[in-house]
Image (cartoon, rainbow, N blue to C red; front, top):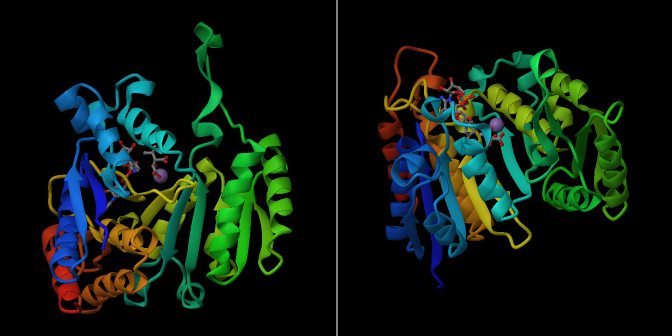
Length: 362
Ligand code: NAD
Ligand code: IPM
Ligand code: MN
């Protein structure tokens, strides 16, 4: 079968540590499952600034462009926080990469694993009904990219501004994505906005409504973002697919991560119209725990599960990998962030265990 090329971008902080576990999984997929995957590693983020003087080197973009998918770790850290805003690696590398490949559609599946039920800060009578939300976040528009954005004025009149702007075509394409994915799930979309205040949200709601006419089999509900933040905690089983703008999706997906137990378990996939995908954990470079071999590699590993599903179109193997993660949890493997006792395993041990379990399923 045709070779699938993957560019690997470990990045900063815990990125390389969790990516190391990703490599172990790729090795099993290649050796035991005989998948024809080739991979190339490139620099991105702070480490690329240190090594090449720029956060997103041309060779990195070129390698991504020649690949079928990209597996990313995380970007940024205290060392580069004081750079001018446009040079910070989050903007100059991560947002630039998303924009360059037009990755407008971001998918973050958040579900409570039965094995980790006790980890959820939700009251048991609420979480036991189930928590399984697919966040669909618009990723290349909104206030992250709107112009004008900048600073002006002096003294007490010094000011800074960003622009939330949404074009109808941007809302249409992300809405279609949400309805199509809902078709494969519980057929229910909740669109999040602030249409009681923001013009961009009024267009958002109107456009989602009009797109929904082509999907009569999918139920659609609208919620204001403040209420949504509350409903996710009070009554999460009402949600199936949650559709939102760039900023709202960023915030609500971290809320969902906290509810499933740790941001270290929430993977994410971003796509353009050609189905080219970048897979990355939803969390960041976690400078507070970087270099200690204690980060949770589950999000990074589940990114590979998403890659198997969406890029390689191998749902069975994708499922086997997810089951291997759950099996490691079931037999008691925990990293520090998801352990309720003083006992936990290292990033490395967790990754090796999942690789071993996956290997035994080949
Ligand atoms: P963060 O997600 O890095 O960390 C928030 C908290 O979650 C920390 O306590 C951290 O230890 C914990 N955490 C995160 N990932 C974990 C994991 N895998 N296992 C265990 N614990 C984990 O967010 P932050 O502290 O706000 O940001 C740190 C840096 O990361 C910043 O430079 C930020 O801009 C960047 N960032 C990058 C990405 C990305 O590359 N996609 C995403 C978010 C933040
Ligand atoms: C994420 C991150 C990024 C975002 C930052 C690092 C730019 O928080 O992927 O969720 O806000 O999109
Ligand atoms: Mn975020």
